[in-house]
Each structure stands twice: as C-alpha cells, then as structure tokens.
Amino acid sequence: MNVEELVRDSLREQASDVPPPRSGFADRILAARRRRRARTLAAAAGTTALVVAAAVGVPMLLDAGPETGRGRGIHVVGDEVSDRGVQSHVDQSPPRDRIAVGDQVLAAYYTSKKVRQPNRDEIVERTYSVLNQETGRYEVDDRWSFLAVAPGMRTAAVLERELPAPRIGLLDLRTGKVTRWIPLAQGAGGLYFSPDGSKLVATTYDKNPDRAYWAHKVEVNNSYEPWRVPCRTGFAVVDVATGNSDWHALPAYAGGGGGYGSGENLRFNTDGTLLYEPINMAPGAIYRDFGGKAVTTPAKEAHVDLWSAPAGLSPDGKLVAGPFAGGAKTTATQVLDPRTGERVAKLRGQELLAWVDNERLIAWDIAPGGGEYENRLVLVGIGSKKTISLSGARTPKDHSSKRWEPVFARG
Image (cartoon, rainbow, N blue to C red; front, side, top):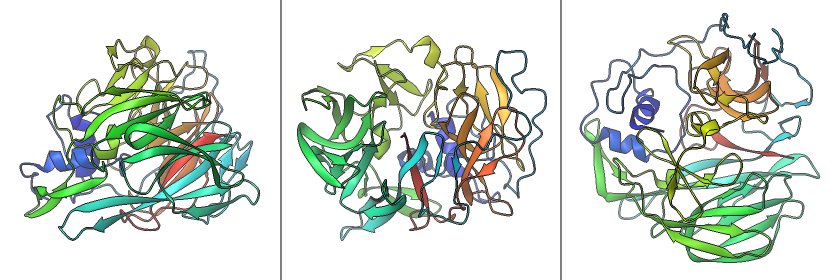
C-alpha cells in the first residue's frame, strides 16, 4: 500500500472537522497495521496529495450500474448471490462457531491489545482463536504471537510469544500440539505459507516489530505517541518437509516512511514462485526472487494489492480484487482486469478478503444501521446487489477483545 492509501485509511477515523494533520502524522499512520483499511473516502492521485472526505453515514444500497462483467466472458450470478455452501453465524462477533463458504473457511481469527511498558513503550499483542475441527468451535490459544494456517487446514505455523522468535512451530490443528520445531538463523516476527503449503517465508527482525518506542515518539493532535522503528533484517524461505532454510539479508524498505512494524512481513505471490513485499510508495509492492533480488512484477499480478484487497487474484486468474470503490454514503468494492487494471465489475462491501470461487468473495461490510467501523463478514457476488451476512458486526473500538481480524484458509 502506498502513502496515499495508508494515510487515507487512518485519517478516516478522524472527524470531518479535525484540523489538517501535523508533521509526523503520516509516519504514525505508516506504522499502523491494516486495522481499518476499508474506508469510504476518496484519495487524490500521487503519493503525497491527500484528501479527507466527509464523515460516512449509514450506507445505502449500491446501484451496481452497467459494470457487471457482461460481455467480458464473466458469469454474472444475478441479483441474489448464491448461498451454496454457506455456514454463517450472524449473531456472533467474535465468532464462536465455524464460518465457511464452500471450502473457504475462517480457520482462525485474532484480537489484539496494546500492552504499555514501564518506559512508556507499547507492544501490540495478538491472541488467536483457532477452529477446533472436531467440535466446529473457535478456541483461544494464547501461546502464539503469530499464526499462519496452511492450505488443507491440517497444519499451522506458529511463533512463540517473545518476538523475534528463534524457531517456528508446526502445530497440528487436529490435536493442538506442536509436532516439530524448525530453528532459524535469525529471529522471526511473521510467517506466511506458500499457496501449496510446501514452503514458509519467515521475515526476520532484530527487534520486536510490534513494539512502538517512546524514544521515537511522534506528535499526533497535540499529544505524543510511541512509534515503531524499522527493524527488519531479512527473510528465510523454509522447506516445510525438511526444515531446511536459506536466510537472506533484506533491511526495511528505505524508499520513504518506513515503520510498518509487522507490515514489513514478506509473503508469497499467487503461484508461490516469488515473494511479495508491500511498500509504502508506488507501485505498492516489490516482487523478489527467493534470494531477495527485485524482479519484474508478473504481468498477471500487476494490479494485485494485498493491503487494500487481500483477496488478490481469483482462482482462475481472470480477475483481481480491487480497492474500495464507494462514496461518502455508499459502500462498494470492485474487481479488475488483472493485466490492465480496468474495472470489470462493481460489488457490495468495503474490503475484499478472500475468493470463494470465481464469482463470489468474502468481504467486510457495514452492518445495517451501524457506523462505518461496525463491519461484519459478508458474501458478495459479481452482479449481485445483495449480500449474505456471515458474522455479527465487530465493535468499532481498536485493540479491544471484540474487534477481531480473520485468518482464512481452504479446507
């Protein structure tokens, strides 16, 4: 995500009558995790021009208009999105019982809290709730600071509480026990599986990437807040079967801003042949080979932006999830042609999280009658004006026990 989008993301939580941000405010925003990416405002083009929109009211129904994918070889599901394979719990937030659509499953979710340190530093700590596949219920597992679920939902990769962690645990999701530990040359702060589950990329740090330092505080609205510092050292691509890994140096991106914290984590690209590094300036991402060398962005991924639209490419590769496309009082998302970036269809929702199939996606959207941050999981479809609710609405309060972030995996 570039500066423009990150600043847009967090400025939206300020009231419309707040004065322009003071010096250093953009830095504070760049340090924030993607807690509130789904927003209803426009941003000016370029990496430094910023526009703060008016406060968002209760969303109105989206008029899908003519952009429904017809004539482009894309099947339109119609006014009603298909409810096949839906397991929903619209009265639960955070969820207690299994949520899934088809084989796309909410495998886990986490809440976070800020833990104040004696020296006025702050550490954001995550607590995961993981799906028990026998009972179909989510159970708190507070042993881990970071958890990634492999395709198939048999294994999760975990990091222990103290970051950076010197080893990776492979957690059997059926028994809840660690079956193997994989040591690392340097301590890790984040993990992602490859699309086929055969590899992990572990991003390494020399400090806790989720710690904000009072010694590096920034001014925000006439007060000061601690701020994260760039501390990435590199990454290791790990063979899950053997535990073998190669570590490569890769300091934090130095092109401007910095301070992503856990947002500096690398992940695999769509087919698992490259690494994807989000950056805070255009083009929004750098693709690298497994040795860390920057390479040309694959043509089919030229418009993938996993910060603003985590769903990425559709399973058949013919569409890519796009950013927010709504207005001051409407929510909408969009899907794009992956090679040209041209909008193919406009959908409901605030943020596209995961593809279910080539026509349906799981998204965040505002709950009826709720404020802009009181969003719940919904199922949206190309050409559909309506949604199917999957969960209850989250609380708007950041770092609270009832504001949760999903972890999806194919079961």
